[in-house]
View (cartoon, rainbow, N blue to C red):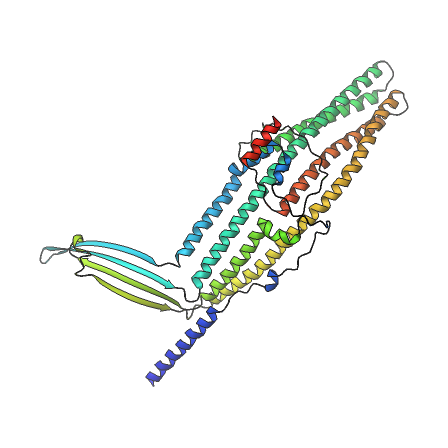
Length: 474
């Protein structure tokens, strides 16, 4: 009866082991097949052109200062350095994960001295042991863990590239924001100067008995408002310069000099196809690698529930003195095979597998969200550019009309045909139109830069390009 019981246990163990092996050897990937075959649009909604996206968009600016600032930012930005260390940390984790696929060899050396009090004698004992341990990757468990580490490392590299592109965009956008702030400051100074001239004329007329006290007070109020606007704009410009200095890794002193114009962007850029975005945009690639890493993590969690086989080879020697070790006379060795299988763990391994499965399903939704957000960003940037170009043309006409109206209103005021409030209203419209025009030009530039970022691709500025642009500037 006892032998039959033992035979049944042995038979059940062999059947269970064989079944586990077959299950483990089968694919454990649960990645939704629809994720790999997403039906992507053939063209962008707002554009039918299919020209490939151009790289090196930064070169088109042809400004040595901004290109040098980008180069400095890539080399010295603190946040980018943090990202670079994350990549290196993950690289070391990859080495750690890969080491489990190889045998491990340990050496231990012991030496002791003991005393026999009854005989008043001393004895020396020395030993050396070598242990070679290797876990056989029967079910591909270790390979799944190593694959997960590889994919995580690739995702971290892609995240680093995305952070680098975002840094370039931040530097260039902030640089143009400084240019815009300088243009607005110049406009506000001109406006204050104009208000001061008007005040002098009105005060002179009032002293001559040709004007009213109310007009003087209104003119003084207008001048003080414009002087306040100038002061506020100086502060805003200094803050932007400090932000730019911080981005390039320099102590933000607010002393950086920026002298450039806001170019008017009228040309269209090649947008490529939506399907190209998946392989061009580092952020999308990172999201995909993270999804694959979670799939490998599920495979690892699944295979954790199967038996493990490890082999250990031990060799050692003992002697009275260290010099006698490894002489060969007392060298012993042993080979040990060990199979361990989880039998009861209160559902821990099953819960870990289910947790990994849920994380994978969550990752699928995160990838889809990232993918369609990337498409939306491109579409929105295209739509925004069209709207801004139209707004620029209408505001350009509004500016010309407002300038003429401001000039006529002041001439009519001097002729006594209109009140000074009419002059102030016309001047406000004129200066608002001019400032809005400057802001629209910068919004066009910022939106174009965001479009380049949304499309992905390379932006590298070589040392040769920086040198060439410096030569052109000189």
